Image (tube, rainbow, N blue to C red; front, side, top):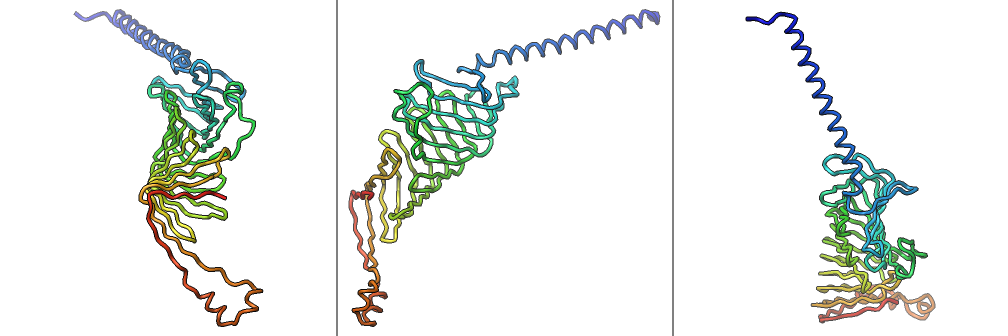
Length: 312
C-alpha cells in the first residue's frame, strides 16, 4: 500500500531537517574542538610563552637561569597536527652556565610540537659569542661587548627545543677575525656549546701568516676555547704541514694564539731568498744580481709526532 503524497512530503522534510541539524552539529563541534586546541597550545608546547613588543617569545630554563629563547615576530597557523609557522625568528642560546650568547636567526621556520623541532625554511645566520660575565649579569641580558663573534651562514637548520641542539647537512660558510672558509654539515650541542664541522673543511687565514687549511672534520669548543681539525693540511708560501690533528688555541677575542699539530706530523719547508736591496745592488755586479734572482728555493722535509707554532 503506497503512502499518501502529503505524508511522503512530511517524511522528506523531516529527513532534510534532521540531516541539516546533524551537519550543523558536526560543524560547530569541530569548530569548538579546534578552538579548545588552539587555546591549549601554549600549555602543550612545554615551555613558557609570552607576548613581547616584537611578537612572541618562547623560553626554557633550568629553574634558575634561562637556557635559550625563541622569539618570532609572527606565530600563526597552529594546525590540528601540532605544527606551526614562525616568521622573523631569532634564537638565543645562553648555555647552562650562562657563558654564551649564541644567536640563530632566519626569516621562516616551522615548528613541530611532537618532535620539538624548529626547522628553518631557507637561509640562517649564526653568531657564536662568549659571555664570561653571564652569571654575574641579569638573566637574558645582552653582553656589554660582542667581541669578535664567529659568524656562520647556512640553510635548512633544525633547532630542537627539548635538547637545545641544532644541526644541518647543508654547506656552511664561516668567518672569524683572522679567517674565513666553509664546511659541509654542522651540529651545535646546546649542553656543551660545542660546534662540529662535519666534513670538507676549507679555511683561508689572512694576514702576515696567510695560509690555506683543508681538513676532514672540525670541532669548535667553548672550554677550552679552541678549534680542533682532523686530518688537517696547512699550505703556506714557505711550505706545507699535515697532521692527524691540528689544534688552534684561541684568545678571549677569538684570535689564534698558537697552533699545535699532533700525530704523524709531516713538514715540507722551503725558503726563497729575498732580492737584494737597491743599496746592496749598487755594490754588486749585474751577473751576481741575476744569479740571486734566479736561485732555486731550498727545501727541507721532516716528520715528527708533535709541532707547535706561536702567533705573533
